[in-house]
Amino acid sequence: MPDAAGAIVEKLTGANPHPVKLILPPTAPLSAMAQLGKQIFFDTSLSASGKQSCASCHSPEHSYGPANNLGVQLGGADMQQAGYRPPPSLTYLYRQQPFSIGPDANDTDVPVDLAQVASQALGSARAQKNAGVAPAAPAMVPQGGLFWDGRADTLQGQALVPLLNPVEMANSSPAEVARKLASATYIDKFKQLFGANIESNASLLVTEAMFAVGRYQMEDPSFHAFTSKYDYWLQGKARLSAAELHGMKLFNDPNKANCAGCHLSKPTADGLPPLFTDTQYEALGVPRNAALAINKDPRFFDMGVCGPFRHDLAEQTQYCGMFLTPTLRNSANRHLYFHNGVYRTLEQVMDFYNLRSTNPEKIYPHDASGKVETYNDLPARYHGNVDISDAPFDRKPGDKPAMTQDEIQDIIAFMNTLNDGYKTSGS
Image (tube, rainbow, N blue to C red; front, side, top):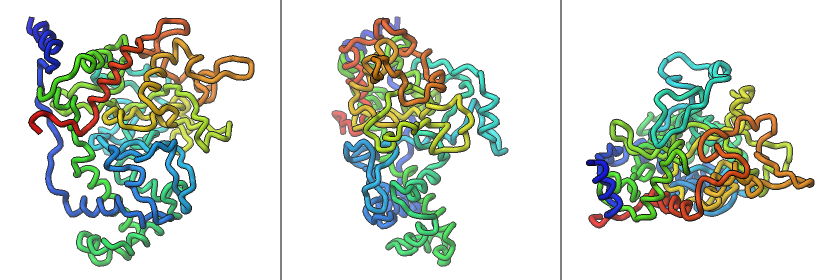
């Protein structure tokens, strides 16, 4: 009866009948290291063009994603080089674990040979996705890491990559980055923190600079604000509308949208707020984005974990087509979706999930003979990697789609409750 009564309260008032106490990240003034990292994060002089900083692609006003609606960002020495992928948001990475394969792969101090672990994982069952909680023992699938393919393990490691990417900040080497840091207006802060000789050690200078950027992302609350309407609803401080409540139920329903199978929606057992990702990797078979410059070459395929931008798992073809499941927090504010930015609205994203298996002709292009080119952004030999077992992908062509258009709109209404910056009546 208590659960039935709670359901009635929820339906009539929109309030959470079982509010929880969330364990939120502590807030404190930024350390000297994080303050230095903030200066580096916004410093355009560190790019070859002199016009691009970390914040250029990761704008604080846009949930640390791009501020514009370009398919990919432009960079390089002349600011005319097209990027390879849409930059993901830098928010909610403070709990991201290093890249691993299989359960407890990092519970040892012995270095892990990922290729060897991946080889052992061949034939292992995929983890069963369930409603909003992580599997008790994840199957041998990739998880953790940063970037769409997990090739960086730390925020420090992630920060260096754009500085050296020829289509981003386009420095020729870490030594060039070091020379620019040595000429920066904040070099005295480096000396205060690391000693007067820091600028003479190029490798250490760059390493400490990237560590500082990582500390900025860990310490500044704007990277993990937890100020969404849903966070307040969890704590009993906000009420959801009828559409938002219905959307939440559909989001969590393993037989309907099943979003929570990958985008975990429940607080952890110890009260940490949900990050709306299981940090695992999935091959979803999203359509090819013909607008990307890199895709003008029909022989090019971005296959995520097995390449081409990471190389250590190139031979582990069971992972070709797999990309990191991103957080859905603030996703309603994004301009582009998926690793290749093929979709620009949540309606398009939901149509993909709803129709990919039942009506593929509405999702993919047709060849000259009229045949539907299913999974056209992945070589045919890897199509077996694409998820066809988890709802709503567990349907066949001609089946009824899992969701109606009205249900999709309610799910999107719920997803809008994941945007940070909600104002409660007491705020």
